[in-house]
Picture 1 (cartoon, rainbow, N blue to C red):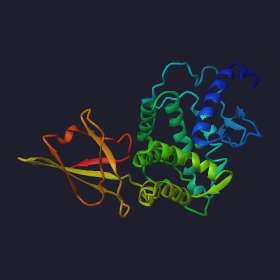
Picture 2 (cartoon, helix red, strand yellow):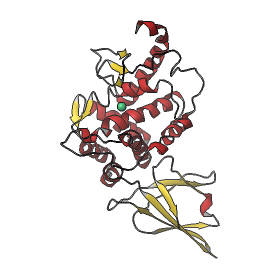
Picture 3 (cartoon, rainbow, N blue to C red):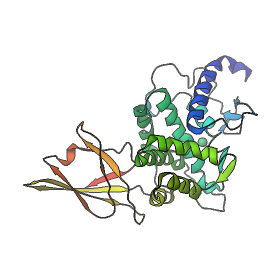
Picture 4 (cartoon, rainbow, N blue to C red):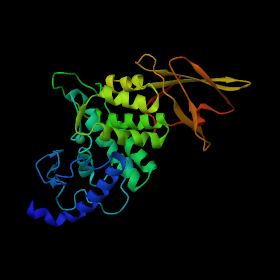
Length: 303
Ligand SMILES: [Zn+2]
């Protein structure tokens, strides 16, 4: 709107940063012939090459990047709506889902793109803080993937954004190879450019590129309601403490390696599955174990 024009120039700065970031992580902007346009509108929506940003975004001082570091732990991110809707040009407008049941393909990646922007502008650690601040808003009441063939969108749609983004963060850390991870999330929007795809195709893509079967992970996080629970028990013995651990999950054969550290020591791996396994800890207490729940989305139950 012409009466908000004075608030626009700062948005150009963000747009340029966002374009550079998303082209780095997802490949070239998919609609160069159309250009890039943002519209002041009653409601935000990712219309291809003319992205609607709602009516609050261009108002005076709203969502302004003031140059001070945002409180990522409180979920703050200046220009979040521009970043999110713009990311949909790659995830949603260029690569689309074939059925509304799988809208997570649009929303999880667009939400994860917000964290990638933070990783690019600030740091990996700050991006982790932002992602983990989403946890309280996950409801885990319905699976992320909905019902097929009936144009189904959940009544509570938020999990496809936040749980979906936390799932992607988990997948990155299970893969534990950033060049491979970034190769995959750039590869999907390139190899499936201007196509409609489904979850199975994304799963197959991950499986082929990593040589790992991620079916149980995709099923647990996207097709079922609960997140995996790490059950742990500590046995104190004269010869040293022993930690017993296993996954409590709904997916058969669920197995997911995770990392932990003791005090400020080096990162270590365990590979829990549904059977009890043991870890000799010597004099270390269970309280001294720092499981990396910020990198892998799971709960811990102590016996
Ligand atoms: Zn969205």
